[in-house]
Length: 460
Image 1 (spheres, one colour):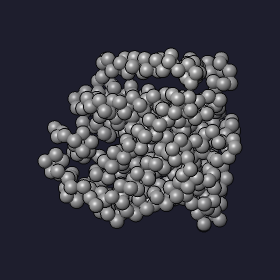
Image 2 (spheres, one colour):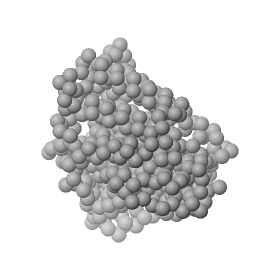
Image 3 (tube, one colour):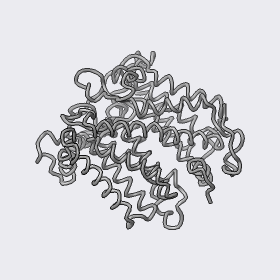
Image 4 (cartoon, one colour):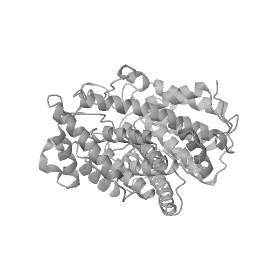
């Protein structure tokens, strides 16, 4: 089954009668986003029960992912991702790595992964049977990156359209349900208080869709996208995760500057409407209302630099202090080329109370300096693109799709210096990583095609 495309609406060379995707591929794109947005990459067990929360699909959580962080079984989500790749290869022509930027990114990625597999500290029994999570993630990342960078452009564009379209739907459902439960006083119990959705990985996805929604609104003035952006903002604000919230604010500022809307009343209107809505709810439902003072004190404690002033209740796990310690440890041990290697156990860095809340330190500890330098390289690639779009914005604003994705993802990569663990924790990291990189292939005409379909009107 395929949709028939109205050539009058979707005119342009990037769309033709063969450019849509089949229903089976769309089903697996839906499964992709369910795995990204409705599952949690945390350990299960008594100490993590409150974190491993899934208000709608919680019974599916253990099926869609591994039972533990480093468990020895394959997850349904892994199988779904592999099937999706098979469908893309089967139904979409692979034109090879024709684009210079894509070819460079893949070659650097491939060499980095090969070096990781040559690490003398690897557990070869784990690699031999692919029992460890890490080698499976690296192999999936390499294969999926090649496929997404090789799909012919006229077939990549409709594929990315469905990733955007279905991603909006799944993210909206999660944000709406999480926010509704939160304001009903039935939110997730996180750090002795209620929250909307305290999973940083899911919040990162919502930041990307929030940026896309805000960009589409600023371009088209379609209030549907403004409401979407507002809902994502509410969900992220009350998630009790400070780093994602700061990533969201930084992304907003860059995007508003890109559209030259920094002096507009949009920011003031959004803050006013949000304050009135939350204030009215807080006033009318005192018995079930959330502890708003808690959130403001948590935010103020970080912004003011005086985190300890409000006691342990407001300090979380001290990611900022931990990040400082892990950076110092990493810089003092740059002579250690190899990391802990691919094996079925975690590698801890001095100064951490739990996992390594620092993506650079995490990949250095687990995979050594090559993967660390690779992550720095990817940050540079996104930063270079983002700076170029900002410079171009004074005369043209044609990157309505790509600019928000780039701005959001560079901020996420920087934010993950305080929260993330790339290529060591969960397939959602690698899957979203590949998808974000594939957006870099879009040219201006490709974006116009996507806009025609998202806005359902002609684009000049």
